[in-house]
Amino acid sequence: MTINDIQTHLQENSKELTNEFKRLFHGRGGLYDEWKHLTIDSIDDILSVALYFEMEPTLEAELIDMLIYFISKTRHKTIVLQRRYIKGTTSEVIAGELEENLHVVENGMKLKLNLLSNRNSGYFPDMKNGREFIRANAKDKSVLNLFSYTCAFSIAAKLGGAKSVSNIDMSKGALSTGRANHHLNDIDTKGVGFLPYNILKSFSRIKKKGPYDLIIIDPPTFQKGSFEATKDYRKLIMKLPQIAAENCTLLACLNSPDLDADFIIKLINELAPSFKFVKRLENVKEFASENEEKSLKNLVFQRKTSDKLF
Ligand SMILES: C[S@@+](CC[C@H](N)C(=O)[O-])C[C@H]1O[C@@H](n2cnc3c(N)ncnc32)[C@H](O)[C@@H]1O
Image 1 (spheres, rainbow, N blue to C red):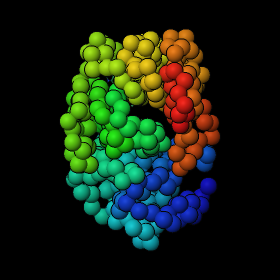
Image 2: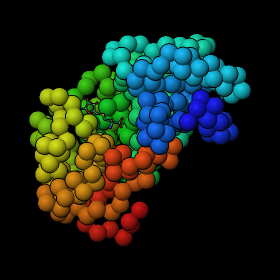
Image 3: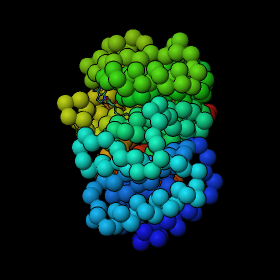
């Protein structure tokens, strides 16, 4: 794929851009072999470019020239470049200016965004379909959002009419962005908890606020000293029956390239058999990958047979 081909790809994907987030080029999915290191996103009037490894300098310059030309024909005023392969570096503003208080828009929902850090932007765009599922299934429910990070699922649940949400994450910083995200969307935080617990060590406190009608488990695959999916996911599933309401719906997420959907389905069958597997949510089409089992898995389970099977 040449730089010209990337330009054509971008033009085709940019026909109906709005202020909503849209991934325009997803090299990470492995579908464009020699471009695995490149992603390009449209964030309102910002074109956000991420490089996951260093490019040959003349090719990088050619790519940047093409992008500067590309935005002369689109709604974008700014180009931000993140060099993800350099730990701890700040992003470069290649064209235009970057405002300080940024947010991204997804289905009308606003979420604070940090484009200057090359990690921890505050927003995981590939989870859009998971948030749509939660919004559509939260009405009047008591929701538990485990590994809530900046509380995007909580916003989706409240916009979907949730009665209450308990957001649990050991990062106080993430939870304070989460609270700000509620304010940004004019959501009353009465009934919304922001609880800075280590999930693996706080089951009794989590249980006290239960039982929950809708539970989200969206952990990291591996966070040193905090969570390792291979050995810790089973500890969460083991406790589910104690914290879940009779008719509970569970969204269990897994983003490991090495663990497949069966890993979770088998754990549920073994440790929480009252939950039945309903379906795997489709991934966002702009994030298509050469191997779906290696990409994000969002698995829906339902406790007790319900008439309503989504
Ligand atoms: C992949 S992010 C979760 C994404 C989030 N669900 C979303 O919708 O944006 C992982 C989060 O898990 C949290 N975390 C990791 N281990 C934890 C633990 N043992 N207890 C509580 N939080 C933990 C991290 O602080 C981080 O915010």
